[in-house]
Amino acid sequence: MNASDLFVRALENEGVEIIYGVPGEENLDFLEALRKSGITLILTRHEQGAAFMAATYGRLTGKPGVCLATLGPGATNLVTGAAYAQLGAFPLVMITGQKPIKASKQGQFQILDVVEMMHPLTKYTRQIVNVTLIPSIVREAFRLAQEERPGAVHLELPEDIAREPVDKSTTPVFQIAFTRRPNADEGVMQEAATMIRTARHPLLLIGAGANRNRVRSALSRFVAETGIYFFNTQMGKGVVDENSPQCLGTAALSDNDYIHCAIDRADLVVNVGHDVVEKPPFFMEHGGKKVIHVNFSTAIVDNVYFPQLGVIGDIANSINRLTEAVGPLKQDHSYFKQVKTQLDLHLREQVANNDFPLKPQRFVADVRKIMPDDGVIALDNGVYKIWFARNYLASEPNTVLLDNALATMGAGLPSAMEVARLYPHKRVMAICGDGGFMMNSQELETAVRLGLNLVVLILEDGSYGMIRWKQYGMGYPDFGLQFNNPDFVLYAQSYGAQGHRVNQTEEFAPLLENCFTSGGVHLITLPVDYSENNKVLIDELKLKVCLI
Image 1 (spheres, helix red, strand yellow):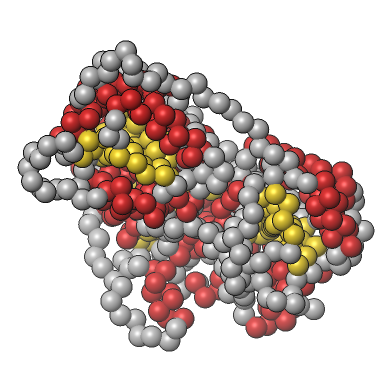
Image 2: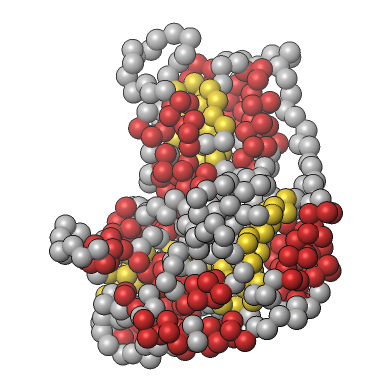
């Protein structure tokens, strides 16, 4: 047995079954140890795709996903994936190779200080220099990746250390110690309950950190028994069913949306599972509404977020105790009902519009009609993300996967691929702009090779639409953000996938249904019309109606 064998044994001890990556010369001893193990290697076409897939595994399972790259450029290609997992709180373990550290092999060729590079992007980064320390280092890496707040960790295994023999004195792998999260202080719980009961217009905010099975059940009960109205952040969609009559929608923007009418009226927001890493759903002001921060850890204080009370501990336990202590609320909810009515009317606008290219309201409605409640859409980053966040109602958690922390382009396709691999019997769809899709489009080959059932929807407008919208909103001329595309139908076919192009509005929904029914990897090119983008914001007339 050598160090690589011990490393792989430590990974197996952590329950690792899959590693995603692009190995290099410096990983060959580790790769041989993988070959002899029970761990499956999924070879991707780019290290970034491997990191996105591994991070999505962590996001959906709660167990750290693992990805592999070589030194130098292989390691630098993991940087975006590291930031994606670290800001999104997805448990991720990255393993990279390195040239020998005990003797020079090729001078400084390809050598970067990868550990130092990863330091600001991870919870933990370590070069392995001693075989005996492998079991403890691996255990510590997995502990930190998974512990609240979850995130990315990095381990570097140099080429010469990887092949060193293991003797009888080497430390064996460590037994995994499981811990229970502490519960919130009883005095704080009572203070929170009093604040909720005595507030005139309390609102519940559901963020990404609430996206856990036990928390979902607790929050659903809290909403039902107290009668409180609620809204989500983008990454909190589906934790409580958005079809609830008490749901005021998703805060896709930080201001000037329908939900902000309700937020402005609220004098208390009970914030469950949200922190400032995710784009703020509203801005706090000194002397304004109060905020109760309910989370696993204390709040990061910021100019836009400084809660007056922190309920810190196991979230599910905290919410269950609040449900008992608060009871049915007796406040007047008529204003929130009015906002809900106006929002529902707004979300129905343009859904039957047959214009071609399709407007956002129409293509979002068509996708929602075809996707079952347990179907999963994985969104890349673009202006369509705002439309789906606002207009696509999620009934279950983790059915709308998007990134509103790093908000990187290029993650939509690899993320959807991992969902399709984990849940082969669910309908899974990647939704990408034409710009974001091309950033990792090579992973179509990986999807076909893995035999996935996956629909990839490309919303084609020939530009970086989100930035173009912002450019217009700031009064600048339309400049520098348009490009040309390949023939996406032929492009998909070149990888062995099925390619389709929508030529009229009425074709889209039936085509989408047919793609899911037939199985395999399908790519649909959908021309879109983003002239409705400014309707994401409330016009002054609607705002006046909302505020009556």
